[in-house]
Image (cartoon, rainbow, N blue to C red):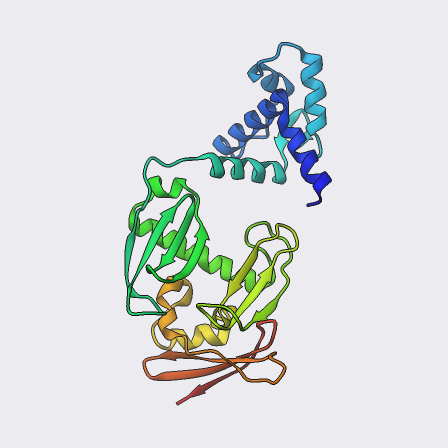
Length: 281
């Protein structure tokens, strides 16, 4: 979003009457998803102002940007819903946090135990020395879910993010992702980087993660009794062989998937596209 676009969006939220309108519509749509919306009278009744002309002015400023009108009812646009979901997520403070959850696995980079720690909205998976995975998790999950449910939902979220990133879609803002292969960073010397042109976030995947949801790869795991989409990503690191650059221009990477003595050698290009998948028996 351009600077002028950001300033315009913030301006819409800066007025108390406009914010009240957005909050009323958000509350209604979150509590009654099937409702057609709210009429002018409904909205005005919930406002703190008693000046209907001024209220109507601010309502019109929101139309076709964060609010849409159908028949006599007003509803939030998709962007309006996303905006209030984000505001709710970033201002919600759980009464407790997961200080540390033991995952029953070893860190893929050292012999230490792998743990999950939740801090300020982010779940960090790793050990004292290494950060293996990091993802934003809605704070309400901490209070509303059991530990098992929490980790199951985080696992599903990771898989969705991996698929979107590999497809060139930012899982945070749905913007388009660039791509590049890096071979000069720790702790993983070979990683794919995906900078988002819309929100500026740079996302990363290991070479095996770029293709882990391809049919051939899923079939390989399924032959060993492993359903990839039902397995937490942090439990798959032990099945990834070491990645290596196999072309002079650094545009091709080769790595292994290893399960129960069975090996599948995979080759991907500079964009993370699967070029070859050969099982060694």
